[in-house]
Every structure is written in C-alpha cells, then in structure tokens.
Image 1: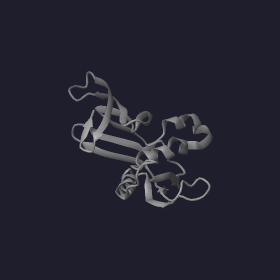
Image 2 (image 1 turned 45 degrees about the vertical axis):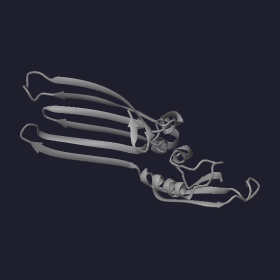
Image 3 (image 1 turned 180 degrees about the horizontal axis):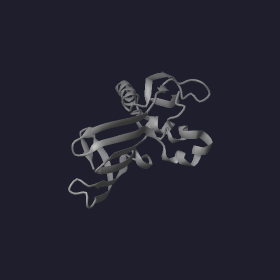
Image 4 (image 1 turned 90 degrees about the vertical axis):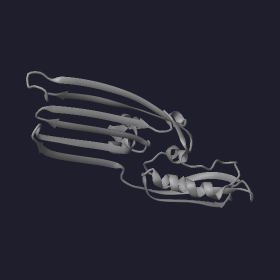
Length: 196
C-alpha cells in the first residue's frame, strides 16, 4: 500500500500544488503505473526543470511497516514567468506596439508579502496570470487574465478575463469603447470529458 508522500526540493511552489498532480493516495493499494503517470503529470505542468518520483520502503519512527511504500517526489524548479514586447507598422494603424507579461505559477496571496519578500512572493500558487497591452495611433486594448486550477482543493478550475479597448478605425471624430468581463469555470469529469 501507499505510505507517506514526501515532497522535496520545492522552494517556491506550494506542496499542495504538487500533490494535486499526484495520482497516488496514502492507504490505497500501490500502483506503479500511477507512480509513473504522476511523474509525467508533474513534468507537464511546466513548473519544474527535473522531476523524480520513486517509492522507498517505509522505515523509521513514522514508518508504517513492510506492506507500505513511501513515495518521494523530488523536484527542481524552473523559471515560469514570461515577458514579451513588440513594435510594428501597418497602413491602418501606422506605428503600434504591445507588451505582455505572464506568470504560469502565480500566487495572488503573495500581494500581502510583496514588500517583505519582493516579487518572489507572487510565485508558487499554481495560478496562471497574464496582462497584455496593445497601443497604436487608432486603437488600444488591455487584457487581464487569471485562472486558478484546483479551486479550493476541488477539481474545478476557475478564472476571469477583463478586457478594455478603444478604436478609431471608422473615423477620427469619435472612439468606440468596449469593456468586457468573462468568468469561466471548468471541471474534468473524466479523462475524456470536461464540463465548463
């Protein structure tokens, strides 16, 4: 059976974020296919440079006995932030530019500690955050997106998108302003079906 699950090497990413991707549960019958699948899932989230998931005999004071195998999850974290900028020229827009900043391992709770710990406090929560701005002579747009997988430790993934845009493509006499807000939630019902 599966004994204790120990996570090692995660300096930034919260332990529960790693455990969400683990298919093994303490007390259940040990399954080597789930062990390999857990390692693959952790590699696919993109938070880690290296992942090693393996079983060891349950020993020591906290050991559960010969019938149990503890699972060790060793991770080596990698950079998860992205920044991009571009400039261009078009006959409609003349000169325009855009920039985008994204963090795929964002932690909104880090805003409370940003002055103590710096920007590092905004990492490790397993959330996706993105801000994109595009500005030109005749238009501008801003998009802010945030998504939280395993919302409140459930199978639900929730998030929102906020958009603001203004264009003068039709005429220079007036602007067409638009604002949008999208709230989304999805649930993985099984490996082949997602409800949203």
